[in-house]
Length: 111
Image 1 (tube, helix red, strand yellow):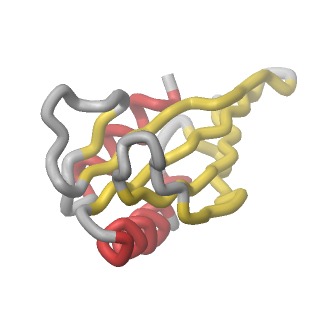
Image 2: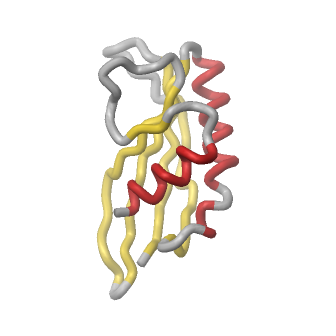
């Protein structure tokens, strides 16, 4: 499961908690991983993950997003990942909860 590989990788490298779902009592700053799509290409699998960085301010959310992108640069060294590419990243503040967040979209190829 690619989400678990990315979760474990980021848990070891990020300076904030990393989750696969919204925690019951969220801390001020944290990261959530969500799979938004996937498929197969022969023996290879593909996945698109949305990785959301939450912060107590817009500046903190943006800083976490930058930290995330730096940490993700070496994820291709992890089995079973063959390729991980940043598709886009942007301000994704949650207007319903009024929580500051950024979202980075990554496309993966793995086996």
